Length: 287
Image (cartoon, rainbow, N blue to C red; front, top):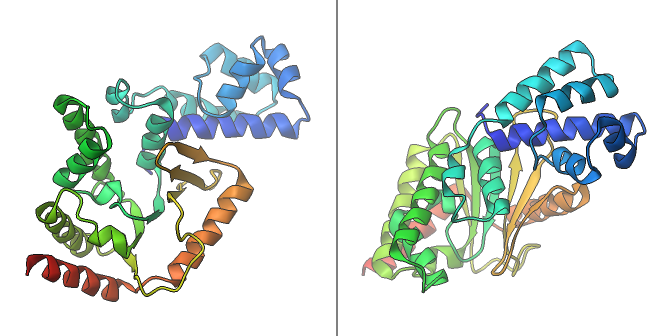
């Protein structure tokens, strides 16, 4: 399991919320008894605020956690207090994106669907720079470099221990869109094939061909389904659109995304066929 302060804080919050609900306490009643605001307790339960040690001790007593549970909560609080690598980029990215980096870093597996742009975990620095510069044409070069640096650090999860299990489904347009020009795309596609070879046990790449007649995610935005090693943590969805990003915890919505992913998987080429198509595109661009 990879230590992520974001995941630890979320895990702690979920355990606190679940116990409060099990005891039949409203957020307002619990907050009053613990001497904190409802807003602060809600933020703690959603993993967005750190709980002071004395407040955690009071909560453990009020919620009747046993000794083993209390120990686990204190360990999670200690882990949540660490500083994740992504915090060095807090001036560049909003809080929601920073939380996504934290969840991604701590995930055991990710099922990703990308429609038009290569998944960030698979991008070369040239490809990433072309995307970032095109998306913000007035951005300073130094900031572009920092954003690319953050993307490259994210990719360490592919080769670190334990390795992230990544299934990357992408539309055929993703491997044909000449982001940054033919030279940059060629480098990106060759890099993708190298990763498929190097990470055969943990990376699966599948392409939805133009010949696919339709699937549930067609025309939709990119999204990731993140799962975690701890059996107490549910699956999370990360969704990206042109104008917004969103972390989704609602179980029903997550289930709908899971069903959509299962459906889009049926429309993909298998791994060997996907690799063959990528090689075909490389040949076409090179000729």
